[in-house]
Length: 122
Figure 1: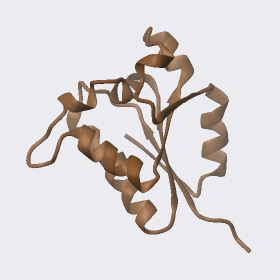
Figure 2: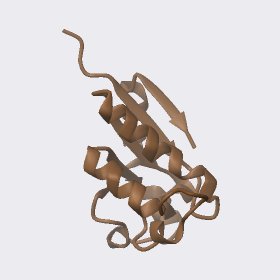
Figure 3: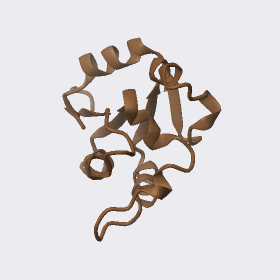
């Protein structure tokens, strides 16, 4: 029997580009509603999205704040992973991220890409 489908969203855009931040969360929630596993991997400047207090500062158009969308995605079961090396590069400590975001090593991204049925980059 085939395993459950998996989608990987890689967020490289940070809070300085707010229009690029909503899609991975909305798509992740949609995937979960379709019974597809969804993971968002935050890389480079993308890690600023899950730094405590940052998502509350992002609001675009008629959308709720990014924090509200993020909370909905977390509630739906979307997994959030943060690149440890990106955190080191940007001098952000492990404890500075929201509790739901798990800090992982670089090899994790390679494994996720190889295991995913599809990947999208933002």
